[in-house]
Amino acid sequence: MAGKLYLIPTIISDETQHVVIPQQVKEVLPGIKYFLAEDLRTARRFLSSLKVYPTIEELNFQVLNKETPAIDLPDLMKPLEAGFNMGVISESGCPGVADPGALAVAYAHAHNFQVVPLVGPSSILLALMASGLNGQQFAFNGYLPVDVNEASKKIKELERESKLKNQTQIFIETPYRNNAVFSHLLKNLHAHTRLTVALDITGKNESIVTKAVSTWKSNTIVWPKTPAVFLFLA
Image (cartoon, rainbow, N blue to C red; front, side):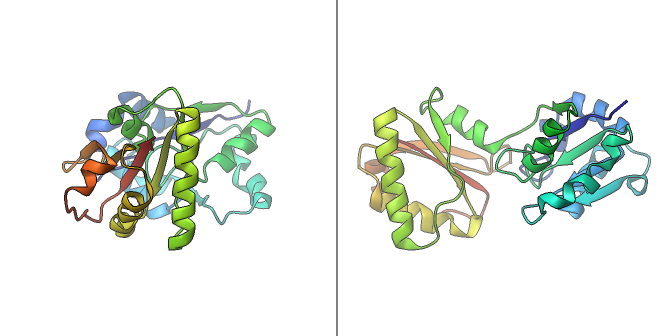
């Protein structure tokens, strides 16, 4: 009998595992000894913090990240063939969402292994829920270009699409670039466009605020270097 591929959610803010990780995840984990993880150190620390294993040393971890070539997947997924359950753990949040875990999931589907997604925190969906923007039509766009001109071009393109489709545009950014991206948004979005900045979601310093661009411009803000999700709706 083939094993199942479980998608294991992890925390998106430090020290929140006992609040945001459902009991179901803790009940499923003891039956999984093989894991694919974006970052081995983070995965080990997370599983250890849940205290569901006598020792983490009994577990087997392999790296699955954006550098993993498709040719490596057959070897990585061998435990499923042997009848063992496997877990995929993202660096943050839910595997397969803005995450290389989708590689393992695609392989599992192609080879008729059952995929089991488990409930957990996703900064993208939590930010959308709390934004007050359109949750019926939305698009996740990953990261904006780093180049100033390319970023400006992309923002204007996304705003046109947002207005045409009544679609919320969502993207994330590296914490140290929060202020640069916010500045790009204020310079390139129309005054009436509603912009949401969501910081440290599920954390003790969580902040999710939606305002028109014209209102954001009336205040001088310096954002902390913390994980952020940006959303706007024209």
